[in-house]
Length: 328
Ligand code: NAX
Picture (cartoon, rainbow, N blue to C red):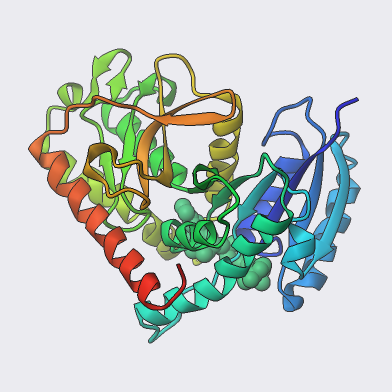
């Protein structure tokens, strides 16, 4: 029998954690034949609730679940981790300046990055979900000099899935007919969902839509502000859809993209498409054999260029701010 894959989830007692853990344990993260061992990392105030979730996980009698460990010590939580989902973060509260938000999160992601550096398995793959996700991923990555930088990624898959869904609704296509959509830049309101290279049942999506006003005034803002719309409707931020996207992100990274398709991931830039090297920015990527590659050679029109540049500029500012704070 296979040795279980160690999956660490931070913020395990939060609402995304609750939607995520049962799907990991039932085999949706890595595959229906891959046993998993869970490490739940929480802050002391979250430990009791995490224990309650562990009880519920036990009560599911998942055949693939080989163990659950609960801790508030990152050195224990990441020990031997093969996959780490960094969900727990410090949310922005009223009156909080960006600098306060970045330093509060630096206090979380810097020590977690160090613990990953010192204790995780050699094949560790990290996904940062907690916001500001791209910059939190940068902080963790900078604190883990012994781990290849490309193992640190940030989640833009929820934005990607939201964009596919909006495009399907507009065109009447099935979501499964939509391929090659791209989210560029930051997981924030500046993100750019790009349909110019997307395909709908093999036809160019921008040509099928053929409606520049819809693209600029409806599609892009609807995708970028979807998180706020969910909060407005549900009275709480996206949880099940965020957990689903985290599952998709890791599943695709490990098991690959379909032939002829790609996905969106926040990854350390190699300078492609004019994105400064080292910034954790979202790109179109293909995945194979547990590795990803940026899709090269896409023609970027003026409309797209301006939007990619604006989002990347925001990432540059966030990077400069955390550099100033001594977090990277
Ligand atoms: P919750 O507030 O429900 O849960 C967060 C949990 O993290 C809490 O249980 C808390 O105790 C724990 N936590 C805090 N600091 C910790 C630390 N240092 N170590 C371990 N655990 C810690 O938030 P939830 O709704 O689950 O959202 C989690 C994060 O995901 C937030 O930062 C949120 O902004 C972010 N999101 C990111 C998305 C993306 O697409 N990248 C979309 C959804 C979501 O908004």
